[in-house]
Length: 197
Image 1 (spheres, one colour):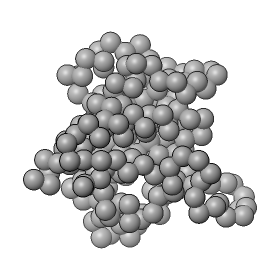
Image 2 (cartoon, helix red, strand yellow; image 1 turned 120 degrees about the horizontal axis):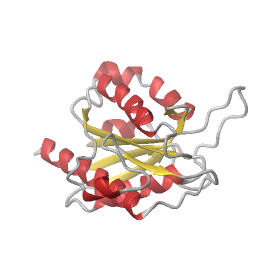
Image 3 (cartoon, one colour; image 1 turned 60 degrees about the vertical axis):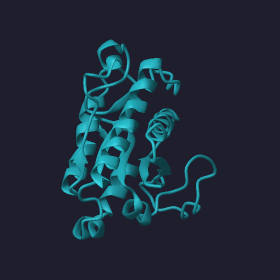
């Protein structure tokens, strides 16, 4: 069964919750399933290597996941209007995949979480999409035909799914945020199914 890779980095749990909702949306499309993966953390000073698998949550991504996926969604918390360093570091290592066209023609999208409503969600989503364009992905967002995009009072943008965690870093998604994350997952899964037909 074709799989959509849901690749994320999450520190406080918000992005991981978004990833699970995205994966749920993917599973709602007949004949498609999600493959949840995360990226390892990075540190400014080299320390002992990370274990081969995280203690909880999704396993670490492997390059085969990129080759085997029918589509890709990437998620990261916002760091000054951009993706977090672990996700950027992983993307920066994909020169061989870029050169060989591993992701060319595969549908892709992004999701994020911020502490505040104006904490850089849209700029983060847009900057996460730029490397996917370089890889030849077919980029998609959330269309305004999704009713929750017009009613949300927290996260959710046409550029991708998002969550506002607040000052206390609350990972609990609002109903609209969860609905929009599932919608984005369905959208990428449906596009992947159509492109494979």
